[in-house]
Length: 567
Image (tube, rainbow, N blue to C red; front, side):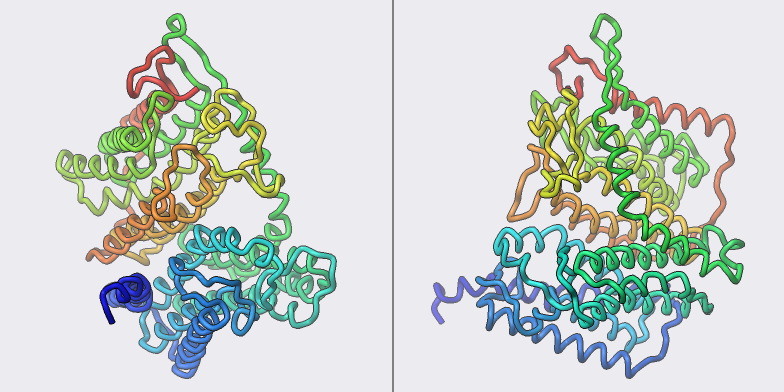
């Protein structure tokens, strides 16, 4: 083969080696490292393990062959098929290769009795796949195949919202889709804890509406209710025993959490619509107060900025038992966020932007300073920051809504978005999207961070992981979520790099950094915290004031860098 013939083949070969050999080796090696400190019980099920590996491997192979034979492409995002594949394994699953990969990961972890492989790597792999689908593959495939993709309905895919009758095969497939992953996950969690808390009774309501749904629209609603209910039920089952040990020790606790999850599942659509209306009001609520003859401005979203700063200093200072050190870290976060954003997309219209990933870099510098200046263990500082970061981010996103930053792309369905008319919002001033329904990416971030925070706290209070591993999990899960979220950000300054938005590449870097941090040797973290005293209250107030000044107060008549927020 001559050099010209070899060059086109190098890309697919390198890409294939990365995902077929490189990624599995990284995850397997990571699981081996984590198994040194994580020794949660793994059930001895060799037949199940072997069946999962064989079935998963065959499904992966069949999916790859179907793509090549029927789609004339490769099982790689960079080298997609020429035509939409609807036959073979793709008649059953929308993404058979990924389904097979999950089976192989699950079966391998069972076969080798790997605690980390079963309880950490396999769930994280599922999250990575979901993030890749939402953040890249689904939008790219929809753009490539359009209406043909909407007409394609694999057996295990979500039903179309139509008034046509659905058969028993589709209803049974949706039953498997909703309940099988949940039953496996809950059974494994209970096995690891050595308890039997599987409360099925509340979920019988979901079972009934799934089996009795007659139209595609009714079945879709039932699937969404069941997905929310089972996911929320599993989440509560994971976090509540550590956060509320006495309450969750009661014999009725499993049924109670299941009932709560089902009730929220039935009302999830209404709850989401209420949250969207609330965030739309915040997005249009900006108001300014001018002082010193108009030279100094206080924006009303200073309340949200102050809340974020106060929460951060309060939590971080308490966990470290050193509120002054928390102020130092906060200053590092603000300086890093402002400097990074200025270098990335600062301009005459964006004199004082802030960037999340710059805050991570600045916070790392603040952690180093706090470590050497106050003689606090690095692991303890990092743990404190991770435990507080999610709540800081959630509060900060309220400020983003009012400021108009971090907004989403136009929504295809008007009900899926929020509208902004406030003339000083970046949505109107910079993106020129006044009154256009936009995906509520700020709300996505709020919900994710409010879910991640209690999960990290439960890992800490339950003593399930070392300090470094909890910090690593923060970066891993944040990177996974940000990869998907940033795909739907619609700010004009967002740059594209090789088919992905620049922040998506940074999110991948955060995920890799999290894998490294989680593998660092560590011990179970102590649960002692600092007391709430005058020094702590003063630091909390100072932290709120510092954040409010940096992110919500400026000098509107100035044109110097860092002097003025947009609008």
